[in-house]
Amino acid sequence: MILASAGRSSTSAQSGYEVKTFAPEPNDVRCVGRVQATCERHCVRWSPTNGALATAGVSGGVHLYKPDESLTLLGTIPEEELDIGEVYGIDFSPGSRYLATGGSAAQEEVAVWDLRRRKKHRVLTGHDSAVNTVKYGEFGRVLGSGSASGVVLVHDVESGAQTGRLTPPTLSGVTSIDFSKYSPQHLVSACMDGTVRLWDIEAGQLQSTLTVRGSECYQVEFSPTVPGLLGYVKSDGRVVLQDITSPTPSGALTFKGCQATSMCWHYSGFALAVGTSDGRISWLDTRKISGGADVATCQIYDIKAHDGGVEALSWQHPIPQSFQVEKTPSRGDNIPDSPMTPIAAKSRLLHEPAPAPAPVVDAVSRDLATTRIDQTSSVSTKELETIIENATEKLGDALRAQVRDLHLELLRQHQSTVDETAQMFAEMRQLQLEMAQEIAQLRNELGR
Image 1 (cartoon, rainbow, N blue to C red):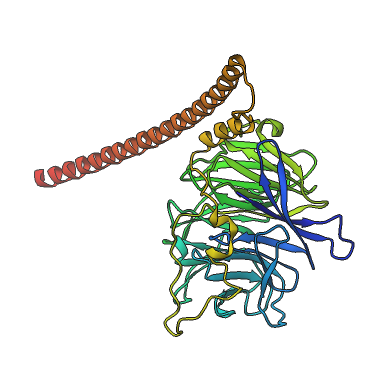
Image 2: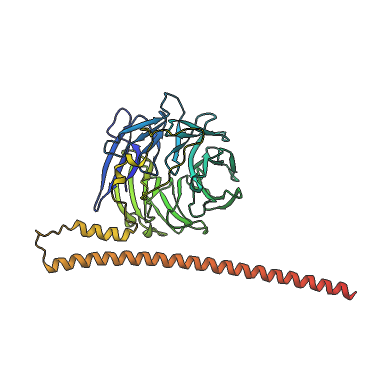
């Protein structure tokens, strides 16, 4: 899986910003693509089909790149020389047909672009200040957006109607939002005052505040594999994992002497990429992040990616053998694909075997593969036994870690069930007491 990042460049005196792609290898991380940006890039996002990499920033709209070594430009949004203002957030619809942008353009803070027709599809209104983040939710049925005024709006994608307005008790600029794929009614938001809030968009209410005010929270994301688990990064260098049902974090670590500016979950849920203000990107093992975890202990890889701060990160998506693309709007006829459309055929990655879903097997297979054994090489029985023992030991450690994580999750679910049962019995006892009081009152009245 390839990771894309945007940050400041030390090799370009003219622009000073660049977009890079990285591919982890058994013992290192290799830069597989690079392109100089004409201005500062605030956001970077892979399309769900991995056919295009989108970036946006101070000016020039959205740039779409092909995932090759030179990151060939596929096109820009919009194609015309129009000033759409500064773009702070972008997100693709699940089928890659549409691209949502959020920024500073007056009266058009949230716009949805049709990549096949190469034109603006819809403008979503309601914000009174710049939009810092946009995100598709409920499997593409709604679009959430958070603004500098602290308000989060939810729009229906089909009709464009506003279905929710989430206003926190204390207003502070929203820096990031995300939807849970396991409980689609849940939306989490991060703010400049350091708070992380959990919302129920169906009820339109604040469900809980997960953190109190403090250092600025730059980004928050739900885990792709563990229901209710989310991660967020803060300006004091902290990387935090927390369950939405718990008032305290389940794990945290701190980067010393720098800020944690961006983050992105790997699709497996076992790794978290974190970008820092000094230009480094760290791949962290989420299973090792605990209350007082040391950064070096949790690091899988650590590289110097940019000369300045890492502005944004985006990991490629696991591609199924087939996926559903949105239907063409009824008002239009069949339109041929264009270079602007990031479809599957344009990505060389889709022609490669899909990554295996079990990271433990991947690790052992990689270790065995790095030991080059063929028919022409002479390997003693003792050396072969050592190789097998090492691979078996690593497999055992990984399996034990997974069993431990599963055990902890079962304990958490058991405790949750116990709490719910206790609450149910407490409510039943309260009802019994109320019924007993009513019966006593009726007896007194009848006795009179």
